[in-house]
Image (cartoon, rainbow, N blue to C red; front, top):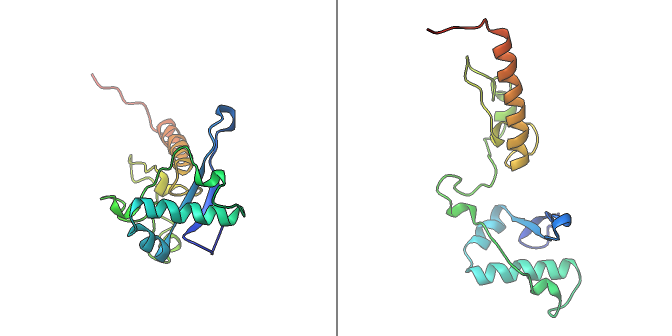
Length: 149
C-alpha cells in the first residue's frame, strides 16, 4: 500500500508455475480521477515512475521495460461508472445485513457483490457462487419432490 503516488495498492498477481510475472496496481479516489484524465502514455509513465521509486531503481531498470502494460479506466465503463468494486452508501451493509443477498422464495443471489470476502473480485464471485449453490441444494432437499406429467 502506498500514499506516495497514484498507485495506492499493488499486488503480485504472478503465476509462477507458468513463469508469468505480473503486478496489478490500483489507482483510486481523487488520484484516480486525475490519473484517468491523462493520456495512456502519461498514465503508463506515472505508474512506472512510482514503481521505480518504490523499488529504488533508475531509468535504465527493467521496471521501465515491461513486456506488456494493460490498463482499465473504470470510469469509462458504462455499467461500473468508475468503481472496480461495488460501493454502497455508508452504513448500507450494516443497515440491510439481515436481507442483503438472502434468498427470496426460490430466487437466490450470487455474485461478487454478495460475497462476504473479496467483494468486487473474481475470488469473491467464486466464494459467493459456492455459497449460493449450497443454499440451493439445501433448499431443494427441504422441498417435497414435484412430478409433472
